[in-house]
Image (cartoon, rainbow, N blue to C red; front, side, top):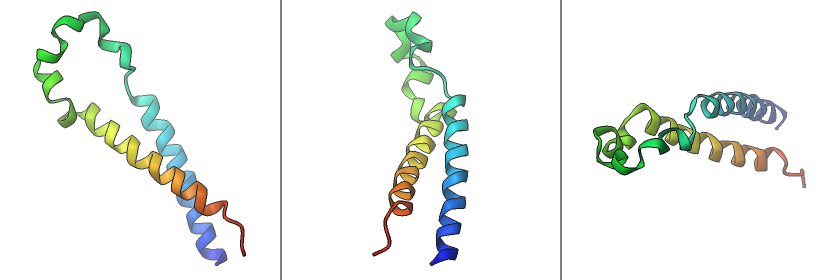
Length: 79
């Protein structure tokens, strides 16, 4: 059980570092508010999910879920 806990802790630390880096690389939500009237009509507005920004949002969600699951698993008390 000790080896599994060490492996999960290492994965947790790597996830924390990766999640921090991904969040810092993302643009703020207010970056495009100056062009509200036509932002949805552009190519990038329609295909935002396929762009690098959309991929980063998906990666952030997965890493955040992994963070929460690992935090819960690592903090379970031994019965």
